[in-house]
Image 1 (cartoon, helix red, strand yellow):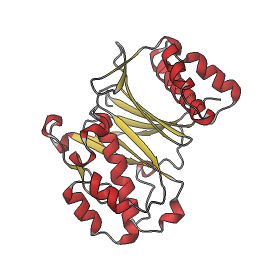
Image 2 (cartoon, rainbow, N blue to C red):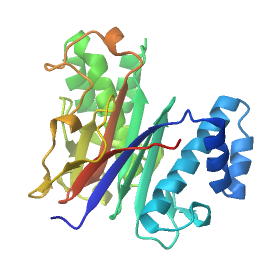
Image 3 (cartoon, one colour):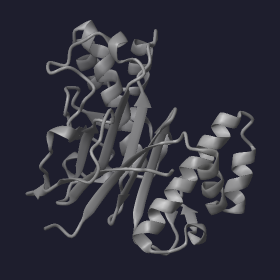
Length: 266
């Protein structure tokens, strides 16, 4: 059994008033100030819920009071725990929250809500590498939206994993366009593309405590962890999936156990 693990927690940010009050009590003064800066109550409550659930989840691994956790920011703003080996990354879209927790560094996760857009081509040309854009343009039109969201979430997850965020330039990390496609090229400072592992995550439904065992230098994926975004052949009508979610996890390519777990704050 590998000594390394990645746990991906999935939950909802809509919680009861009592739960929201409990989660708010976990937050630091700085976090509460940030919460109060939101003008829309829905956005404020989602921020409180996300930060509170992050604190409670991390505290469960460390057996400490959630309110005592201290966070620091990396050179480009990536958050981390102060003086703790546990690593995490967080992403949310609308009401959905994903938290990735690992006992090794450089993990990134991203989730996006699928939306109808009129400017897929303009965004793809601006954010994809030249080769990605060419490959994307060669896809049948009915497949392009699926491929766009797959690539977008993978790119976001990678730039979060290396701690740079969008400032790195999404076009600087290049992926194979097909479903399940891995990294092809990245900036030299982050090693070789083969040193990273990318998972397309289904977030429509997750069974609690689903374990996946490692195999060789990577991971043996269970069907539940394969992309649930497209059809079997990658085709389908985008309108049928508007409002669904597309997600990706990026980690260093090493042997570890990956689990999908449900967050239940109430």
